[in-house]
Amino acid sequence: MDPRIVQIAEAVRDEVHEFEQEEQRPGYGSFAHENLAGYCAIASYLLVSVADKLGYNLDLVVGRTKMNLKSTSSNHAWTEHEDEIVDLTATQFWTSVKRVHVTKCSNRYYRIIAKNESAHDELKNRWSTQSPYTYMTDLDDRAHKLAQQLTPVQAA
Image (cartoon, rainbow, N blue to C red; front, side, top):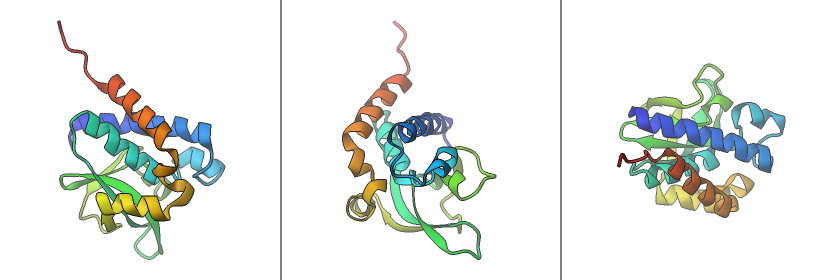
């Protein structure tokens, strides 16, 4: 994984924590504060937006994620870059993963339902308060601010 994408993802996760503290709506009460449960679509959308502003092309994905191979799966959103998944809220399913979880797209715990434009359509039409489209102005402002903060200063 490109270390710059991981750096961007770390900054986005921090921003989503701030957003969660201010909004306290999409997630699941105090549980969300610890692991961003209910914020996967918002975090993924924000990561795609910031990365795009910085010249990286990430795919927005909506699908199902299993907590373990025997359990039922949950609706989930994540991003992909080349052959890897970048999941900012995997901590809601697995306590042993890093804050920015990077794994191969072939990981059997992830199943794609929609990608890119069709994923945006899913989020607009079916995700209610967990949809980033509920908070577009705020998220777009945050994406712009983060991209500016993460843009390297050019030497004179």
